[in-house]
Every structure is written in C-alpha cells, then in structure tokens.
Image 1 (tube, protein in one colour):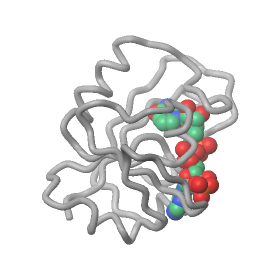
Image 2 (cartoon, protein in one colour):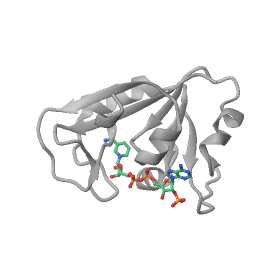
Image 3 (cartoon, protein in one colour):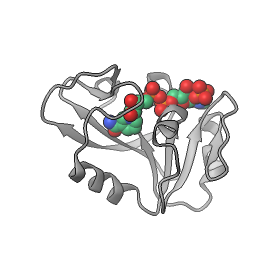
Length: 133
Ligand SMILES: NC(=O)c1ccc[n+]([C@@H]2O[C@H](COP(=O)([O-])OP(=O)(O)OC[C@H]3O[C@@H](n4cnc5c(N)ncnc54)[C@H](OP(=O)(O)O)[C@@H]3O)[C@@H](O)[C@H]2O)c1
C-alpha cells in the first residue's frame, strides 16, 4: 500500500478546528487542498465528514468510524487495518485532518503536506503533529 500522506492546515498555535468547522476560510488554501486530493483516496474521521456533509467530488472518500456510521456515497472502515483492502489500486492516499494521536501513531504517514496559517487561531482541536515530525 502506498504511504498515507496527511494534509493538514494549522495555525501557529497548532489549532486545526473549532467545533466541527475549520477556523478560517482561505480560498487559496482550499485550492491547495483540492490539488493535493483530486483523483485520490481521501481518508477522514467521521466528524470531519459530517461537518462537510457530502462527499467531495472526484475523490474516493473513506471515513473512519467505529460507531456504525454509514453514507451511500462513501466507504466506511472501522479500523485502519482495513485501509489496504479498500485502497485497491489507488496510488496516492491522503488523510485529511488529524484524527487523534493514537490513530497517527498507529499508521504510516509518508510525509505531511502542511499549510501554516500565519497567526494564532482560537479553537478547540489541536494538531498532535509536533511529536511526529
Ligand atoms: N485544518 C485542517 O486541515 C482540518 C482538516 C479536517 C478537519 N479539521 C477539523 O478537525 C475537527 C474534527 O476533528 P475531530 O478530531 O473532532 O474528529 P474526526 O477525527 O474528524 O472524527 C473523529 C471520529 O473519527 C472516528 N475515528 C477516529 N479515529 C479512529 C480509529 N482509529 N478507528 C475508527 N474510527 C476512528 C471516530 O468516529 P466514531 O465516533 O463514529 O466511531 C471518531 O469519533 C473539525 O473542527 C474539523 O473542521 C481540520
């Protein structure tokens, strides 16, 4: 299986989200995200998927969930160990967001495409990345 590459945007204070939303709306950042993910498998946590509410076009969306989440247009897996099975012949696998520290530790992240927002941001969710890069 190809390495899983995390795509994460974070503020200088490592904030990545507030509630179920992104703390910012930056069109260039969204274009960067689209370029990195278009045509590829995109893995995300259940809460991130629910916050966008629908699959992103042109990508194979795989949602991680242990609670039995289902959506007709996405693939749900309950454990990262199932990822190779659903990855089929996909050459590029992206992870969007941070999921949790335990999940990060359990998987192989090939490299990380980071966008730093050049300021601090108020929010609840912090990226656990410093321990991993
Ligand atoms: N800045 C960025 O780049 C970026 C990108 C994406 C999202 N975000 C932000 O991040 C926030 C959401 O993150 P979050 O941490 O709250 O939620 P999340 O990671 O999107 O979803 C958490 C859920 O994913 C499932 N999950 C996580 N790890 C799992 C595992 N190892 N096995 C099975 N299921 C697993 C569980 O679903 P079940 O409860 O169904 O079992 C868990 O409750 C939002 O604010 C969002 O806007 C930021």
